[in-house]
Figure 1 (cartoon, rainbow, N blue to C red):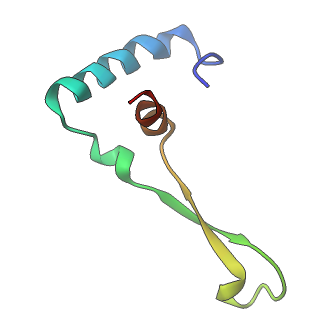
Figure 2: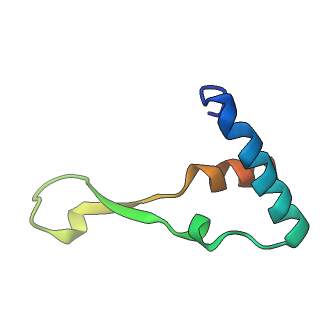
Length: 67
C-alpha cells in the first residue's frame, strides 16, 4: 500500500506511529468509520436488502497490521 505512496508520506507516518507507541494514545479520528450501505438483492426499497460496509482510515489499518 505504501509502496505506491510518495516517499514524503513515509517519514510523517513513522513519526505518528512512534508517538502512538510512546504515548499509548491512539488517534480518535482513526477509530471513526464511514458506514456505506451496499445493495444485496431484490427490492431496493427495503432496508433489509442492504448490508453495511465500514470504511476505516488507511493509516489506522496499516498501524494495526504492524502491531
